[in-house]
Amino acid sequence: MTAWFQSVKKSLTCCFVVPAYWWVDVLVMADGQHAEYSILQGCIMAVGVAVSNAVLLISNAEQVRLASTDPAGAGVQAAANRLRPSS
Image (cartoon, rainbow, N blue to C red; front, top):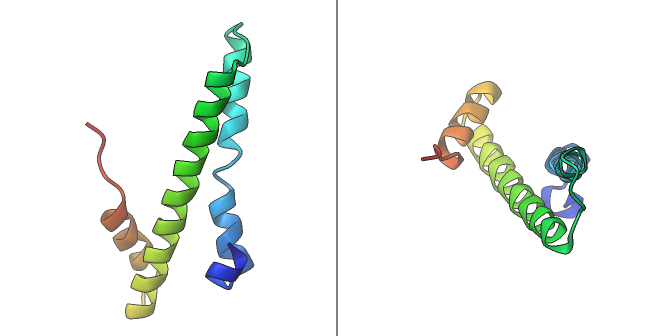
């Protein structure tokens, strides 16, 4: 990802979604269930989707930031473009 973004900071930002996998594992164990294969597979797929969404969000924010002068406004605009409300 560092080669894609040409920035270590941006690639680390995308990778911060990965610890969410550990929270799911902790919650499953706290509930008294065993971490079965299907649960782990679902967690890995969810992390993959979250990382892909983070990559798209940061790429979009970078494009908006280059087109404007306001970095905070670029973040808000990128979030408005990428995030969808849940039903």
